[in-house]
Length: 193
Image 1 (cartoon, rainbow, N blue to C red):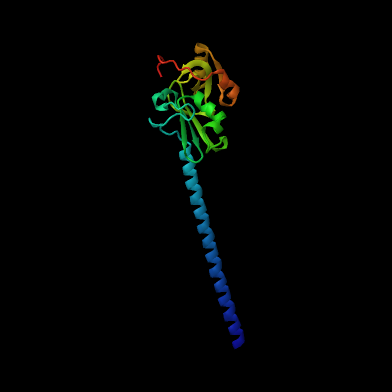
Image 2: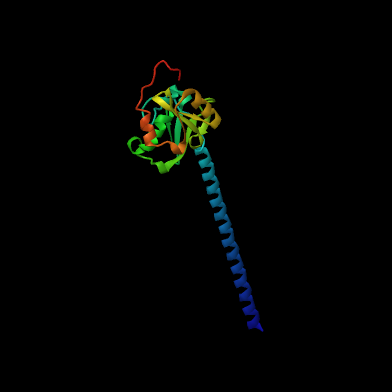
Protein backbone atom coordinates (compact mmCIF):
# COMPACT_ATOMS: atom_id res chain seq x y z
CA UNK A 1 0.00 0.00 0.00
CA UNK A 2 2.92 2.25 0.75
CA UNK A 3 4.17 1.79 -2.82
CA UNK A 4 0.76 2.71 -4.18
CA UNK A 5 0.62 5.89 -2.07
CA UNK A 6 4.15 6.77 -3.10
CA UNK A 7 3.25 6.28 -6.77
CA UNK A 8 0.10 8.31 -6.27
CA UNK A 9 2.14 11.09 -4.61
CA UNK A 10 4.58 11.19 -7.55
CA UNK A 11 1.68 11.29 -9.96
CA UNK A 12 0.10 14.19 -8.09
CA UNK A 13 3.40 16.09 -8.05
CA UNK A 14 3.90 15.38 -11.75
CA UNK A 15 0.42 16.71 -12.62
CA UNK A 16 0.90 19.72 -10.32
CA UNK A 17 4.22 20.52 -12.00
CA UNK A 18 2.66 19.96 -15.42
CA UNK A 19 -0.20 22.32 -14.54
CA UNK A 20 2.21 25.00 -13.28
CA UNK A 21 4.29 24.74 -16.46
CA UNK A 22 1.16 24.84 -18.61
CA UNK A 23 -0.12 27.94 -16.82
CA UNK A 24 3.29 29.60 -17.11
CA UNK A 25 3.42 28.86 -20.84
CA UNK A 26 -0.11 30.17 -21.31
CA UNK A 27 0.70 33.32 -19.38
CA UNK A 28 3.84 33.79 -21.48
CA UNK A 29 1.80 33.47 -24.68
CA UNK A 30 -0.75 35.94 -23.39
CA UNK A 31 2.02 38.32 -22.44
CA UNK A 32 3.71 37.85 -25.80
CA UNK A 33 0.38 38.34 -27.56
CA UNK A 34 -0.31 41.53 -25.65
CA UNK A 35 3.18 42.79 -26.49
CA UNK A 36 2.47 41.99 -30.13
CA UNK A 37 -0.85 43.80 -29.84
CA UNK A 38 0.92 46.77 -28.23
CA UNK A 39 3.47 46.85 -31.08
CA UNK A 40 0.68 46.65 -33.67
CA UNK A 41 -1.21 49.47 -31.94
CA UNK A 42 1.95 51.61 -31.83
CA UNK A 43 2.60 50.91 -35.52
CA UNK A 44 -1.00 51.84 -36.37
CA UNK A 45 -0.67 55.09 -34.40
CA UNK A 46 2.62 55.83 -36.16
CA UNK A 47 1.04 55.06 -39.55
CA UNK A 48 -1.89 57.34 -38.73
CA UNK A 49 0.58 60.13 -37.92
CA UNK A 50 2.32 59.54 -41.26
CA UNK A 51 -1.07 59.90 -42.95
CA UNK A 52 -1.50 63.53 -41.83
CA UNK A 53 -0.07 66.50 -43.77
CA UNK A 54 2.89 68.15 -42.10
CA UNK A 55 3.76 71.80 -41.68
CA UNK A 56 6.19 73.05 -44.32
CA UNK A 57 8.93 75.09 -42.60
CA UNK A 58 10.13 78.32 -44.21
CA UNK A 59 13.72 77.14 -44.53
CA UNK A 60 12.98 73.87 -46.39
CA UNK A 61 13.30 73.82 -50.15
CA UNK A 62 11.19 72.06 -52.75
CA UNK A 63 12.25 68.46 -53.34
CA UNK A 64 12.34 69.04 -57.09
CA UNK A 65 13.21 72.62 -58.00
CA UNK A 66 14.88 74.04 -54.86
CA UNK A 67 12.47 76.96 -54.39
CA UNK A 68 10.97 77.57 -50.93
CA UNK A 69 7.37 76.26 -50.79
CA UNK A 70 6.56 78.30 -47.68
CA UNK A 71 6.52 81.36 -49.98
CA UNK A 72 3.62 79.82 -51.98
CA UNK A 73 1.14 78.46 -49.40
CA UNK A 74 -1.74 78.25 -51.86
CA UNK A 75 0.25 75.85 -54.03
CA UNK A 76 1.72 73.56 -51.35
CA UNK A 77 1.98 69.85 -51.93
CA UNK A 78 3.97 67.19 -50.11
CA UNK A 79 4.88 63.55 -50.11
CA UNK A 80 5.10 61.69 -46.83
CA UNK A 81 7.14 58.50 -46.85
CA UNK A 82 6.51 55.35 -44.83
CA UNK A 83 9.53 56.20 -42.65
CA UNK A 84 7.74 59.39 -41.53
CA UNK A 85 9.86 61.85 -43.52
CA UNK A 86 8.25 64.50 -45.70
CA UNK A 87 9.35 66.17 -48.94
CA UNK A 88 7.57 69.48 -49.71
CA UNK A 89 6.90 71.05 -53.10
CA UNK A 90 5.91 74.53 -54.23
CA UNK A 91 3.24 73.06 -56.51
CA UNK A 92 1.71 69.89 -57.88
CA UNK A 93 3.83 70.15 -61.00
CA UNK A 94 7.03 69.73 -58.97
CA UNK A 95 5.47 66.93 -56.93
CA UNK A 96 4.46 64.88 -59.98
CA UNK A 97 7.80 65.50 -61.72
CA UNK A 98 9.49 64.32 -58.51
CA UNK A 99 7.33 61.18 -58.39
CA UNK A 100 8.20 60.29 -61.98
CA UNK A 101 11.91 60.99 -61.54
CA UNK A 102 12.61 60.10 -57.93
CA UNK A 103 15.92 58.46 -58.78
CA UNK A 104 17.22 61.93 -59.78
CA UNK A 105 15.91 63.81 -56.74
CA UNK A 106 15.90 61.37 -53.82
CA UNK A 107 18.58 58.70 -53.38
CA UNK A 108 17.03 57.25 -50.21
CA UNK A 109 13.42 56.59 -51.29
CA UNK A 110 11.55 54.94 -54.14
CA UNK A 111 7.90 55.15 -55.25
CA UNK A 112 7.21 52.09 -53.10
CA UNK A 113 8.24 54.13 -50.03
CA UNK A 114 5.49 56.74 -50.53
CA UNK A 115 2.84 56.54 -47.81
CA UNK A 116 0.67 59.42 -49.04
CA UNK A 117 0.82 62.57 -51.16
CA UNK A 118 -1.04 65.73 -50.14
CA UNK A 119 -2.14 68.73 -52.21
CA UNK A 120 -4.14 71.83 -51.31
CA UNK A 121 -7.62 72.40 -52.66
CA UNK A 122 -7.37 75.45 -54.91
CA UNK A 123 -10.56 77.03 -53.56
CA UNK A 124 -10.38 76.36 -49.82
CA UNK A 125 -6.67 75.83 -49.22
CA UNK A 126 -7.48 72.67 -47.24
CA UNK A 127 -5.18 69.67 -47.54
CA UNK A 128 -6.59 66.78 -49.59
CA UNK A 129 -5.19 63.40 -50.49
CA UNK A 130 -3.57 63.82 -53.92
CA UNK A 131 -4.94 60.46 -55.09
CA UNK A 132 -8.51 61.65 -54.43
CA UNK A 133 -8.19 65.12 -55.97
CA UNK A 134 -9.62 66.29 -59.30
CA UNK A 135 -7.09 68.25 -61.37
CA UNK A 136 -7.40 70.94 -64.00
CA UNK A 137 -4.16 70.69 -65.93
CA UNK A 138 -2.43 73.47 -67.85
CA UNK A 139 -5.01 76.24 -67.48
CA UNK A 140 -3.24 78.55 -65.05
CA UNK A 141 0.21 79.71 -64.08
CA UNK A 142 1.61 78.78 -60.68
CA UNK A 143 5.03 79.00 -59.03
CA UNK A 144 6.64 76.92 -61.82
CA UNK A 145 4.59 77.94 -64.86
CA UNK A 146 1.54 76.05 -66.09
CA UNK A 147 0.25 74.00 -63.17
CA UNK A 148 -1.99 71.16 -62.12
CA UNK A 149 -4.78 72.77 -60.11
CA UNK A 150 -6.23 70.39 -57.46
CA UNK A 151 -9.82 70.39 -56.24
CA UNK A 152 -11.50 68.24 -53.60
CA UNK A 153 -14.86 68.58 -55.34
CA UNK A 154 -15.34 67.41 -58.93
CA UNK A 155 -18.08 70.00 -59.57
CA UNK A 156 -15.70 72.80 -58.51
CA UNK A 157 -13.03 71.39 -60.84
CA UNK A 158 -15.53 71.28 -63.73
CA UNK A 159 -16.59 74.88 -63.09
CA UNK A 160 -12.97 76.03 -63.00
CA UNK A 161 -12.25 74.03 -66.17
CA UNK A 162 -15.18 75.66 -67.98
CA UNK A 163 -14.01 79.15 -66.96
CA UNK A 164 -10.23 78.71 -67.34
CA UNK A 165 -9.72 75.92 -69.87
CA UNK A 166 -7.10 73.21 -69.56
CA UNK A 167 -7.81 69.51 -69.19
CA UNK A 168 -9.69 67.65 -66.45
CA UNK A 169 -7.72 64.72 -65.01
CA UNK A 170 -7.57 62.35 -62.09
CA UNK A 171 -4.42 61.36 -60.20
CA UNK A 172 -4.26 58.13 -62.23
CA UNK A 173 -4.41 60.09 -65.53
CA UNK A 174 -1.30 62.14 -64.75
CA UNK A 175 1.86 60.63 -66.22
CA UNK A 176 5.25 61.81 -67.54
CA UNK A 177 3.73 62.66 -70.97
CA UNK A 178 1.18 64.96 -69.31
CA UNK A 179 3.97 66.60 -67.32
CA UNK A 180 5.95 67.30 -70.53
CA UNK A 181 3.03 69.33 -71.91
CA UNK A 182 3.36 71.77 -68.99
CA UNK A 183 6.93 72.82 -69.78
CA UNK A 184 9.78 73.44 -67.38
CA UNK A 185 8.97 76.63 -65.49
CA UNK A 186 8.15 80.23 -66.26
CA UNK A 187 6.64 81.70 -63.12
CA UNK A 188 4.98 85.07 -63.71
CA UNK A 189 6.33 87.48 -61.10
CA UNK A 190 3.22 89.67 -61.09
CA UNK A 191 0.79 86.86 -60.24
CA UNK A 192 -0.65 86.55 -56.75
CA UNK A 193 0.51 83.32 -55.19
